[in-house]
Structures are given as structure tokens and as C-alpha cells.
Image 1 (cartoon, one colour):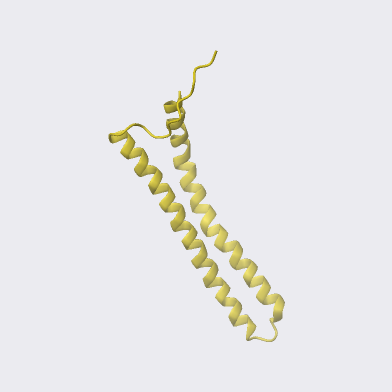
Image 2 (cartoon, rainbow, N blue to C red):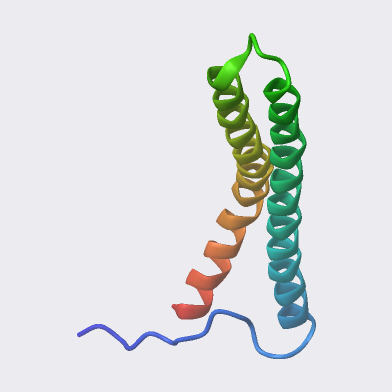
Length: 102
């Protein structure tokens, strides 16, 4: 018969609990920062589409390509740093949760 699992995800109050909470908050704040950065990069590149609207030779295809590029670069500006942060913090965090629930 298996023993019941605890529903805890953070250590009890004290230095360990505060440290775990601070680490989690830091990761979430970094993800919000990276999302904001992705939106700003997207907006800056999308503004280039306005420049191509004034150039008749570029036409609609040029504007669409720039908007697609803006979307791609915006996502990359969010996903790459987020993946790096999560690859560093998530294994440790999951190990701690597993230890708490054991």
C-alpha cells in the first residue's frame, strides 16, 4: 500500500521557504520581462511595415513579410531567454517539490 502524498509545493516558513518563494517569484518576473521585451521587439519591427506601405514597389507582399518577421522575432525574443531561465531553474525546483511530496 502506498503512503499518501503531501500537497506541499513550498517548504515551511523559514529561510528555506522564503528562498524558494523568492526564486519562484524571480523566475515569473523574468518571464514577464521577456514577454514585454518580445512585444517591444515585435512592435519595433512591425513599425517597419509602415515604411514599406509608402514604397509602391514593395506592395502588400513586403508588408506581410515584415509583419511575419516581426511576429517571429518577437516570439524568439521571449522564448529563447525564457527557455534558458527555465532550463536552469526548473530541474532544481522540481527536485525540491519531489522531496517535499515524498
